[in-house]
Length: 508
Ligand SMILES: [Cu+2]
Image (cartoon, rainbow, N blue to C red; front, side, top):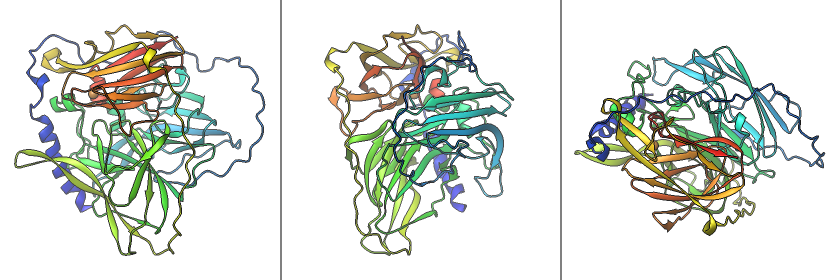
C-alpha cells in the first residue's frame, strides 16, 4: 500500500494545476447570480403503490436460457426470485467504513455495505425489482444511468419524491437493452456519489458472446486527507471550475497500488466492462498491454468494433473491451496504464500510473480462438429532416463571483423545459462556449453522435447516453424521443451539474 501515498502526492499536483487560473471564465466580471441549486421536488408525485391496469401479457414461447457468464470484479447482488426472468434484490443505502490508506479508516455511504455497490446482473428483457431502503441520515434516490426506464422509475427528484431516512421505495421495471450501466443517487449527487454510492448493472444479450471471462472495471477517484478522512465538500474554486478531482485513483473500489497485478490464462479472450464513476476525472486508458478492441459503448454492442491505443472514458460513460491475452512468451507481462496530468517544470504533462500488471498464470494455455459477435445494425434515423435543438454550454460568475454553469444562458430551475413530441426525431447541437469539457448525459433515451465541429465522427457509432463535449466544440447528436415523461439532461461533472448545468426535456 506504500504506493498509495506517493499517488496522493503526484495526483495532488493535478489539483494544483486545476486551481491555476488558466480559464477564460475566470476573467468575467462578477454579476449577481444564484447559489448552488437543489433539485426541486416534483409537482406531481407518482404513487409507487398505485395499481396499474396493464393488459395480461401474451405468453411467450419458453426458450432454453444459456447460463449467464461469470462476472468478476464486483460481487453480485443476491437474486431473491426463483423466476429466471425476474431479478429481485434488496438494496440498502447505509453508512459504513472502508480502508483506502493503511492504518486509516474512511467513513463511507454504500449500498449493502459494499463499495462499489453490488453488481446487478440480468438478461435483456428481464424484469428488475429493487426493494430500496434508505438508512442514510439524508434523503436519496436511485437513478439507473443509461437504462430506458419508465419516467417514474428514473430516480430524478423531478419525478420522484426523495426517499427519506428510514423509508423505502420499490423500483420495478423491464430491462429493455443489453449493455453496461450503473446506478447512483440523483440527490446531492456530487456528494452522495463521492461518498461511495454507486454500483454496476450488466444486462447481457439474449445470447451473450462466449467470452472466457467477463470483468467489471469501475474507475473512480476519491479525495482523501492523509488521516483517511474524505476532504470536505466545500465546493472550492477549482472544484466549481473543473469538478472535484480525487487524489487517490480507485479500481473497483480499491486504491490503485502500482504493485497490483492480474494473472491471466494464456490465450484467454475476456470482456471487460469499463465504467467511469468519477465526479470529474476523465479516464485515459492506455490499451497497449494486451490485444484490445472496443466492442460496446454506453448502449450495447457497436456495429464496428475498433482498436485504439488510448481510450478516453468521461464520467458517466462506459465501454466494453475485448481483451486477448496472447503474449509471445509465458514470461511476458504488460502494464495496463491510466494517464493522469502532472505538472513538470511548470508544464502540465500526462504521466502513466500502472493500474495493473498483467501476466500469465501457470494454467495450460488455451488454444487460439475467436469470439463471435452478433451483427449489430443501428436504425437509420432521418437526420436530414429532423428539427434541431441547440444547447449552449457556458459558464459565468454568479453570486460572490463564483462560477455558474449554464445551459442556454440559464441555471437549473430558471429554464422553461424543452418540449418535444413523443415519437419525434431531433438533432441536438451541443455548443461548448468555453474551454472546460462537459460530458453531457440525457436520461431515459439513447442518442447517436453524428459529428464534431461539423466533421463526421470516427469510432463513435453506437447508442450513447453520455457524450464528451470538448473545449469550444460543437457536437451534433441525433435522437428519437420515444420515452414519455420529464427527463433530466445535464453535465456529468457532478459539480458542474450542482452549479446549474442541468435542464429538463418534456416528451409527451
Ligand atoms: Cu460540465
